[in-house]
Image (cartoon, rainbow, N blue to C red; front, side):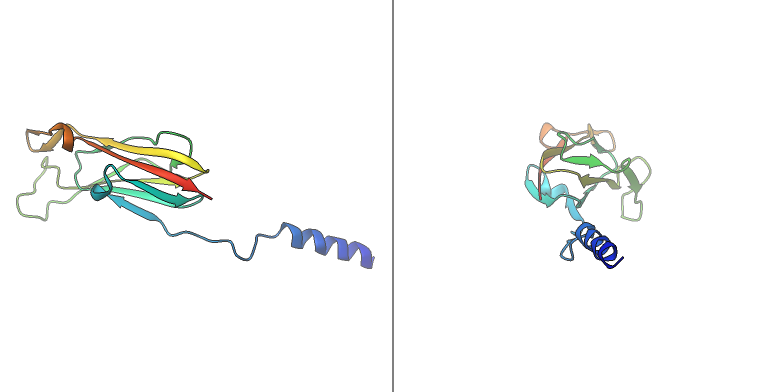
Length: 133
């Protein structure tokens, strides 16, 4: 009986999560990260917040990141000159680093203000994300 209990205890200890397991804080990205490369750890959340509701944030390229939900557009009309249809507010989308490798997050828009078409350099957002162990 003692041998069975010792073996059971050894199996339980061997399958427990390591005491040094790390939970990484979310990595927050925004407009300033355009054309940059960032690194995150497997299991880490990446939150992209762009400063206009005109953006459309796509699904990630590659297999290292997965989208954890749809994008969330939050209009904000409290600033002077902001009203419905002006694009004031944010567009947010969350991703999860699911495996090591590289993925890209992209967003596009055609309008940069009320009836104002975006020039090419302001109509695309892209960040490369390296996922490390």
